[in-house]
Image 1 (cartoon, one colour):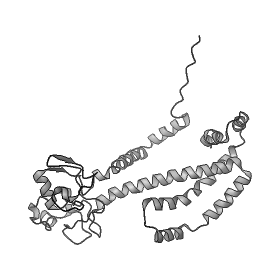
Image 2 (spheres, rainbow, N blue to C red):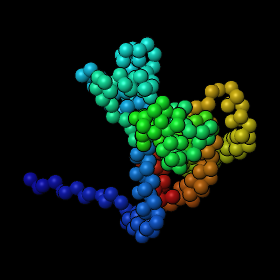
Image 3 (cartoon, rainbow, N blue to C red):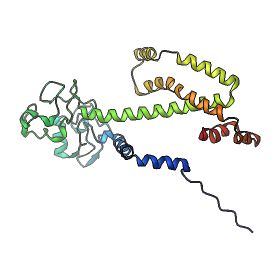
Image 4 (cartoon, rainbow, N blue to C red):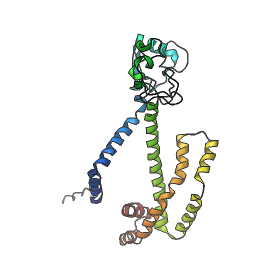
Length: 289
């Protein structure tokens, strides 16, 4: 019995995409900028372990705790039944007397208010003060163990005495995730809408075009102001509002490419073989658009 023919493995990248990747690598500035951005983004995904007002891990009376992941009540440390403030010197002394704590490099979260800054907010970066001025709000001054590098505000504070570095770290993560999700969602909807218009044409294209013209005429700024006045501000609310209008920009380009290529020979051959429209659109037309 003849052996089955060996299956031909398709390359991961097409020759065209390989050339594009080589051209991108040749641009050293862009190539290394991408790697720096990716490293910063991956680090920002673990912001809670880099900048937080809670210890990453603690040991108290022989029990291992993870305050950065679990909200322990203050009652566990001999206090009241309330959320534990790990920056409280009393709580710190209690835990250190019965165990240990490992803190993040920056001991502030994005909303932590620092009441020990040496001057009125907004304050300068801590390294710009001498030891006496930097620690003048602590009970023991420069000798106070709480006035350590981990409690410094490396980029200063904002007008509400919140650490700027912590807010930059968390803000970077939110901004990048927002942009990536918005771009991916807009591309998905825009490409799908443009593909349907360009492939089917006729009344489908006509009705879609009229709808897009009406939709694009809606004043986005006023809609954002109205919704912001009604609903509480939030990540997903703003993302949904932006997504409602951002997909329109891609429709025209994709529609034009599908109108141009829908009657090519390989498309007609696929139709003659009974290939479904969805397969023709997204497996044959879209990669060649």
